[in-house]
Image 1 (cartoon, rainbow, N blue to C red):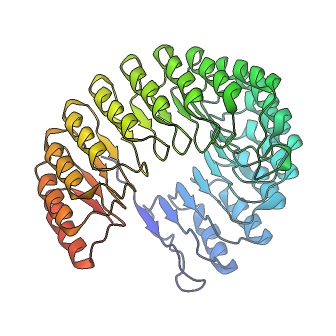
Image 2 (tube, one colour):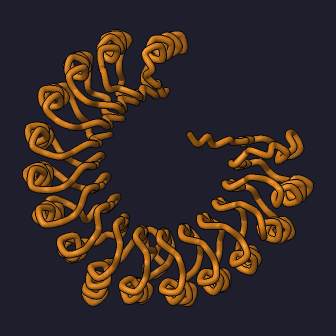
Image 3 (cartoon, rainbow, N blue to C red):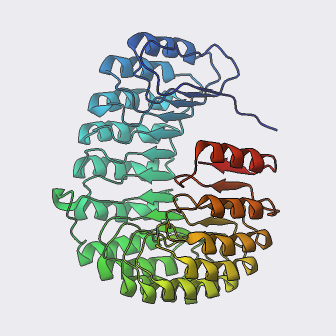
Length: 448
């Protein structure tokens, strides 16, 4: 059995604790949000080459140009495979320092989210990618535009990249067209282009042109993608119609279209109609404007689909839609269902409880439904021992002390349950400690 040794030191102020790399078997060093001093960076750099560190997290540290340069040089010849520099003030100059050494490192996963990297920095990184081992690259929430994206896209066919996150950047129609043209010749299996701030308008997205949608559709169909995320992009009817055609003819198995107010009943019905001939196993549609008609369309398609994961949280469905979905669950292949913050009430939960024992659902997320009441919790609790649920989230559900007592008694009878989340419920610290003690004695992990 493989054991991963970890040294974690987060949230400390500069000078309180010196990073310790002297443990030869430690493979993970987490120094997230540590206000690292130059002296500490020098010590990390000096010890890195002879350490066993494979995962290095320096995220959310305000690193200076000098610190980044020292760190970059230390990565050469080290065993570091995963480097996280999220929100660490990398900017263009830091990106250039990293690009210079990347081909000489063992880094396969690189997180440079939220670092204000512009075109020059992205171009430097793109030029280094073909000679590097990087297969997972995250560049979300930076400041690059067309020229940087063009260099990145041109590097795709020559690189080892398998996963790319360029969400929260200014891609525009021209940028998306570049991506579409490059996809068929790349090795990407995961792509995230969420929240494309088109036309430099961050709070008011504009729909893609029809030409862009057609070419993007063709690129996605011809790609090797298994996971595609295109959230918060106000796709509209034509955009969702293109996505529906994509999932019917592509290799995509995981699709996320979330936080998009243009995805309503008519649009989600297009997705539902495409499910029977798609390879989709995971569909996330949370925080859209799906009502009962859309919920019913998805529910009817479940038995003809390969879906194993379905997230319909935070939409606009009423009792009618939820009840219909509950009745269709036994005919589905779902292993995970999320209906968080869906304003579920007692009647809806009682319907779910009625059908859950006849399903294969292993993970159930009902977080943030504050009107379940004790009657709903009681019905759910009575059903749980007869389900195969392994993970249950009832956080922020306004569960009373009486409801909690009843629920815990039921959880102890569950043969498959491994984890339960009850955070943000009105429970005292003494009640929480008692629940943790009782459930942990039965090897059930409790999260508050």
